[in-house]
View 1 (cartoon, helix red, strand yellow):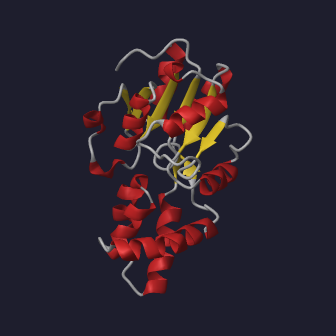
View 2 (cartoon, one colour; view 1 turned 90 degrees about the vertical axis):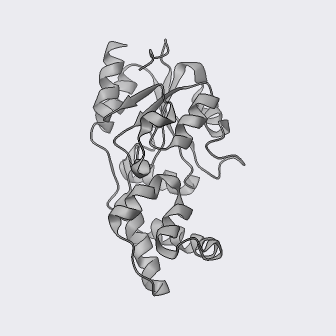
Length: 221
C-alpha cells in the first residue's frame, strides 16, 4: 500500500459493486426482460459477477454475443431497471461509517460511474445520499467514459478539489486505469463484484478488503 496523499481532500467512488450493492435489482430487470423475450433467465451469481462491466455485459449473460440483440434490448433493460425502484439496492457494509468519517474530516465525496447519470441519481436518491454528495458523474455526463480520466477530472472540478489530493475507489480495472490517468490515488474495492479477477493485477495504490479498512486508514492518516 502506497502512502495516502496529504492533505486528503476528497474520495470518489464507483457506484455498482463499490458504493452500492445493486445486483439484485439489476438481475430482476434482466429477468423481466428475459420473460418478455422468451429466453432463459441467467443465474443471479453469473449476472452479479459482471455488473461492474456495464449493461451490455449484463445483457450478454442472457443473449450471448449477439451484439445486434444487445443494442436493440439495451433501452428496454434500462427502462425495466429504473422501474424496479432500486428496492433491493443498499450500501455495502461499512460504507455509511466511511462516509461519516470522510465528512467529519471536512473532506468531500462523490460518485463517478459509467451508469447513466439519471440512474445514478435515482440510486443516490433511494439511498438518501443526494444532499450529501459533492459530485455525481454518470456515463453520459461527458462524451468520455471510464477508463478515460475525463469523468474523474470533471468530478474533481465539480467538488472543487485537486485530483492529486483525492482518492478513487472502484471494483473494476477501468476504475484503476482512470484513476491513475487522472493523477488520483487508487483503491481497489475487494468487496466488489470483481468478475472473478484478482485486483492486485490491476496495479492499484492500495487494496481494501472492506470499507472499514479505508475508514481505519483515514483515522491514522
